[in-house]
Length: 610
Image (cartoon, rainbow, N blue to C red; front, side, top):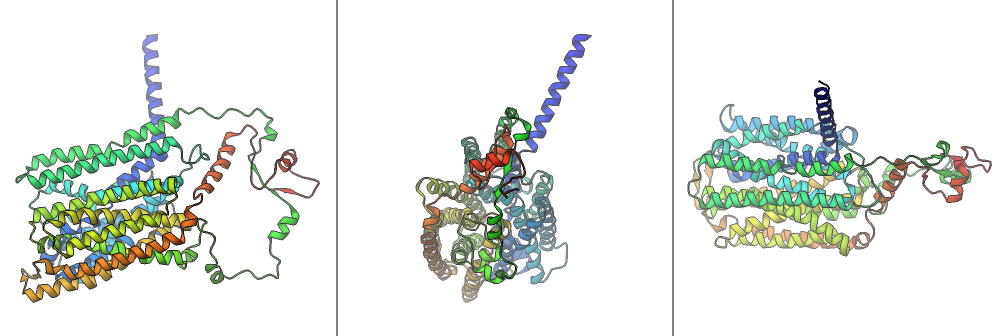
């Protein structure tokens, strides 16, 4: 009986210990990062517009320019995140994620009802509103999850941005596989919109309690090697997922009849690969769970001062302006920004030359690659590719979109840390490579769309982590939520100029010249459909590369210094405070001042302890 009670007690103790560890894992920074991965993996539905755009065009009878106008409002919604940025400045991240989930469900559900004829045919402006609302949920997800992850891992921001934006890139291929397993390959794409309506919203709501700002344990020693190794493990897991998706797409392309039961198997394996990083999370959290507590203080409790700052009365008087001195106005302060790397205010950043140069480069680069991604369906159709192959192109763009984001995040971080290469220079290289992909489409090279989808998917993805890392490094993290979303505004601006006004209009002009009115929509066939527009886009992208080279020159000295030193200094203060043991973390205080002030809070020499 005693043994039975002991076994039950031991079993209860083990169960309680397991529960405590499970709670520790779910409350940790690494589980928060894993939750951010899942949210990002469901937040890229805007990148598969090429699959369901045909259903919209056919069912609603749009011409190409009208369809591209709809695509433009999709890009506006996906990238104009000023509202979630401002909300995130004053509320916790869960508010932003909840708002995004509601907008995602409402916007895409109304598109689904309109395309399938379950509601009366809406006017064009209302469809633009629906897709803008649905796509704007991506900005809310980015702001709530990605920005929070960057703040939780500030010294690894390039790696964090690359990984999370990489999963956004993979989301298109993930959606495609789940969609084919549920609805098959004969669907015109309308059911995909329904999947986009409920799945991202559900994932955001499930992980709302997890996404929050959390202090970094053991801060102060720079990027911990253990943490960096963990990020590489996440990278390897994501590469395995991307390779799997790539292989599945190639197999589906080669096999004439891919049975639906096979899709069930592929999706099960897909979900296992998506959730595999939880093993990395458990491993990382186990290190902090079993870490011994700090040693007790060996000095008297009265001397265990955590942090003191000595301020001399004379210095205090000098640091405070006289009452009759006039403080600079807010407008004057806008044009007197701090040094690069310090925390700019929102207006200081928006009116800076660096932001203007970066904005122009982004308009040229992302605007051009986004035009190619959004028109991939029509480009493939005009060049004579079958619909199944076109769907594969869109999925390939998604996979290489991921590759570009991850490679840009990790590679730019590596060359920056090792060789002090300015991150804007990496952006220049990416834009030059994008020119090759645009040229392949412009000249209609035989089977060149395979290579173009790879190059442009890679370049489109690579620009995002570079853009957001540059903003965080040059303008600081204090108002990163807002500045992050402002940088993304360049995407719809470029999309409107290059996609709607150039590519869409020229496509329709060529279709009318050919007399290509079929089934209520304009259809253009041949290389000429996109030749002139993509020659223009190639030139504009080359201009963007030159502009980003200017930014690389302007910031060369800044990137040659110690970018993340301030986080190590702050971390050392926090570590000293947590360590106790009579350690004193002081700011601007000499050893002698510390000794004098630690014995008493009042000093006879007129100094005050703050």
